Length: 142
Image (cartoon, rainbow, N blue to C red; front, side, top):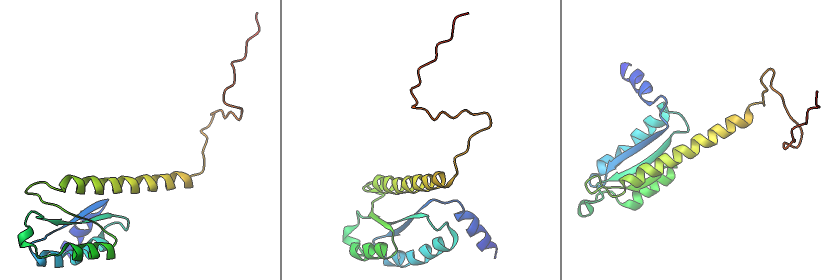
Protein backbone atom coordinates (compact mmCIF):
# COMPACT_ATOMS: atom_id res chain seq x y z
CA UNK A 1 0.00 0.00 0.00
CA UNK A 2 2.85 2.36 0.82
CA UNK A 3 4.48 1.55 -2.53
CA UNK A 4 1.29 2.49 -4.40
CA UNK A 5 1.12 5.88 -2.67
CA UNK A 6 4.75 6.59 -3.57
CA UNK A 7 4.20 5.41 -7.15
CA UNK A 8 1.26 7.74 -7.74
CA UNK A 9 3.18 10.69 -6.33
CA UNK A 10 6.20 9.81 -8.47
CA UNK A 11 4.22 10.02 -11.72
CA UNK A 12 2.10 13.06 -10.78
CA UNK A 13 2.77 15.96 -13.10
CA UNK A 14 5.01 13.99 -15.47
CA UNK A 15 4.66 15.16 -19.07
CA UNK A 16 7.07 12.72 -20.68
CA UNK A 17 8.69 9.34 -20.10
CA UNK A 18 11.43 7.30 -21.74
CA UNK A 19 10.95 3.53 -21.55
CA UNK A 20 14.46 2.20 -22.04
CA UNK A 21 15.39 -1.42 -22.69
CA UNK A 22 18.69 -3.12 -23.51
CA UNK A 23 18.72 -4.45 -27.09
CA UNK A 24 21.12 -7.20 -26.03
CA UNK A 25 18.79 -8.59 -23.31
CA UNK A 26 15.30 -9.61 -24.43
CA UNK A 27 14.08 -9.82 -20.81
CA UNK A 28 14.43 -6.04 -20.51
CA UNK A 29 12.19 -5.62 -23.56
CA UNK A 30 9.64 -8.01 -22.06
CA UNK A 31 9.43 -5.73 -19.00
CA UNK A 32 8.53 -2.71 -21.13
CA UNK A 33 4.87 -3.74 -21.30
CA UNK A 34 4.66 -3.83 -17.49
CA UNK A 35 6.32 -0.41 -17.20
CA UNK A 36 3.99 1.00 -19.84
CA UNK A 37 0.97 -0.34 -17.96
CA UNK A 38 2.24 1.29 -14.77
CA UNK A 39 2.69 4.58 -16.62
CA UNK A 40 -0.82 4.39 -18.08
CA UNK A 41 -2.26 3.54 -14.64
CA UNK A 42 -0.54 6.32 -12.68
CA UNK A 43 0.45 9.13 -15.05
CA UNK A 44 -1.68 11.67 -16.89
CA UNK A 45 -3.53 10.27 -19.90
CA UNK A 46 -1.70 12.56 -22.34
CA UNK A 47 1.86 11.81 -21.19
CA UNK A 48 4.34 11.57 -24.08
CA UNK A 49 6.09 8.19 -24.05
CA UNK A 50 9.10 7.15 -26.11
CA UNK A 51 10.41 3.60 -26.37
CA UNK A 52 14.21 3.59 -26.45
CA UNK A 53 16.33 0.60 -27.40
CA UNK A 54 19.72 1.26 -25.81
CA UNK A 55 23.15 -0.26 -26.50
CA UNK A 56 22.75 -0.13 -30.28
CA UNK A 57 26.55 -0.35 -30.44
CA UNK A 58 26.23 -4.04 -29.44
CA UNK A 59 24.89 -5.13 -32.84
CA UNK A 60 26.63 -8.50 -32.58
CA UNK A 61 24.79 -9.22 -29.29
CA UNK A 62 21.35 -8.03 -30.43
CA UNK A 63 18.52 -10.00 -28.80
CA UNK A 64 15.64 -7.63 -29.63
CA UNK A 65 14.95 -7.15 -33.33
CA UNK A 66 14.36 -3.53 -34.34
CA UNK A 67 11.18 -4.51 -36.21
CA UNK A 68 9.78 -6.19 -33.08
CA UNK A 69 10.36 -3.03 -31.03
CA UNK A 70 8.96 -0.79 -33.78
CA UNK A 71 5.82 -2.92 -34.00
CA UNK A 72 5.36 -2.71 -30.22
CA UNK A 73 5.82 1.08 -30.31
CA UNK A 74 3.35 1.45 -33.16
CA UNK A 75 0.80 -0.82 -31.46
CA UNK A 76 0.96 1.28 -28.29
CA UNK A 77 1.25 4.67 -30.02
CA UNK A 78 4.78 5.34 -28.77
CA UNK A 79 7.66 7.15 -30.40
CA UNK A 80 10.65 4.84 -30.98
CA UNK A 81 14.40 5.21 -31.34
CA UNK A 82 17.54 3.15 -30.80
CA UNK A 83 20.48 4.75 -29.04
CA UNK A 84 23.90 4.01 -27.65
CA UNK A 85 24.90 5.66 -24.40
CA UNK A 86 28.45 4.37 -25.01
CA UNK A 87 29.05 6.31 -28.23
CA UNK A 88 26.19 8.83 -27.67
CA UNK A 89 24.52 7.99 -30.98
CA UNK A 90 20.86 8.88 -31.04
CA UNK A 91 20.76 10.13 -27.44
CA UNK A 92 20.44 13.80 -28.34
CA UNK A 93 17.90 12.99 -31.04
CA UNK A 94 15.81 10.99 -28.52
CA UNK A 95 15.69 13.93 -26.10
CA UNK A 96 15.05 16.47 -28.87
CA UNK A 97 12.18 14.37 -30.25
CA UNK A 98 10.44 13.81 -26.92
CA UNK A 99 10.89 17.45 -25.88
CA UNK A 100 9.54 18.64 -29.23
CA UNK A 101 6.48 16.42 -28.85
CA UNK A 102 5.93 17.60 -25.25
CA UNK A 103 6.22 21.23 -26.37
CA UNK A 104 3.78 20.65 -29.25
CA UNK A 105 1.30 18.97 -26.90
CA UNK A 106 1.57 21.72 -24.26
CA UNK A 107 1.08 24.43 -26.91
CA UNK A 108 -1.97 22.64 -28.26
CA UNK A 109 -3.36 22.28 -24.73
CA UNK A 110 -2.74 25.98 -24.01
CA UNK A 111 -4.36 27.08 -27.25
CA UNK A 112 -7.44 24.97 -26.49
CA UNK A 113 -7.62 26.43 -22.98
CA UNK A 114 -7.30 29.97 -24.33
CA UNK A 115 -9.98 29.36 -26.96
CA UNK A 116 -12.45 28.09 -24.38
CA UNK A 117 -12.07 31.12 -22.11
CA UNK A 118 -14.55 33.95 -22.69
CA UNK A 119 -12.92 37.25 -23.51
CA UNK A 120 -12.86 39.37 -20.38
CA UNK A 121 -12.39 43.09 -20.10
CA UNK A 122 -10.97 44.56 -16.95
CA UNK A 123 -13.01 47.22 -15.16
CA UNK A 124 -12.27 50.65 -16.57
CA UNK A 125 -10.51 49.28 -19.66
CA UNK A 126 -11.42 51.08 -22.90
CA UNK A 127 -12.29 49.09 -26.00
CA UNK A 128 -11.83 50.71 -29.38
CA UNK A 129 -13.98 49.35 -32.19
CA UNK A 130 -12.51 51.72 -34.75
CA UNK A 131 -9.98 50.99 -37.46
CA UNK A 132 -7.12 50.89 -35.01
CA UNK A 133 -5.10 53.61 -36.71
CA UNK A 134 -6.99 56.62 -35.33
CA UNK A 135 -5.11 59.86 -35.76
CA UNK A 136 -4.80 61.92 -32.59
CA UNK A 137 -7.48 64.61 -32.41
CA UNK A 138 -6.29 68.18 -32.36
CA UNK A 139 -7.21 70.19 -29.34
CA UNK A 140 -8.63 73.61 -29.84
CA UNK A 141 -6.58 76.48 -28.84
CA UNK A 142 -7.32 78.40 -25.64
